Length: 273
Image 1 (cartoon, rainbow, N blue to C red):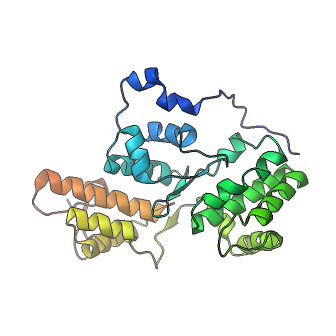
Image 2 (image 1 turned 180 degrees about the vertical axis):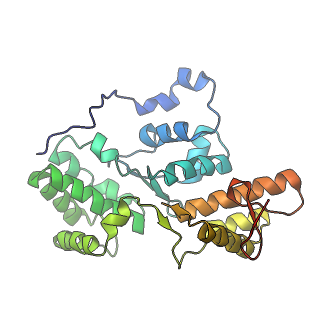
Image 3 (image 1 turned 90 degrees about the vertical axis):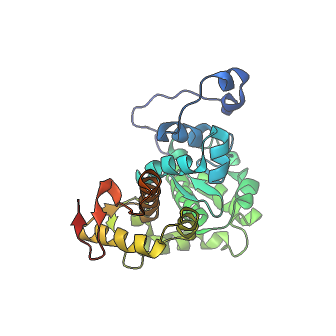
């Protein structure tokens, strides 16, 4: 088993029940901010037994913190852009990649006990990505831990319908390594991909805000390419763009939508003051 050296840090246990404690709830509430949201992601009642991987929707977190969904999304974007956490809000799944490094399972039996919890998490690409990453971490802890994980997945069909057999796990890990998935998992900033397009969440947001999504997309891409902007999460960056557009429209009411950093880009991609 590998030696644990968590960056020379010290730890304090925090009970998740803190969030429902009567005295804690009587304290003044924090306004929407990314640091409080981060603490909720690490210590909230939504967490399960699998370190950093659990089911929750954005609206559920917003309700728990007594924030608006829009404010919660804005704070989440800050966390996402730092590469600290990932989410598939349409499926209701959150993953904090580094959580397992600070909350290692107490024993191989604890890993075996993840079976039901993993089965109950929604099937999506993010879940499979997390499973591969968690397996790699357990492999670094030792063969006993890896066997416990593979046995747990094989006995419980932990990946759900369409999952691969446990005997395929190593091959799967090798393929992901070969295709560069592990490199992408490191959260490297990249320029906007040629095939990037708005998500269903962006479509719904634009409809609610009465924004011309195609126009906003064209302006967003023109700005990103003209400035060679790089980002870890382009979906989150475009969400921030739309939120800025909403704020600008609400303030001025004249229909002009600014780009990020209060820069306006015309139809030809030219910067205007």
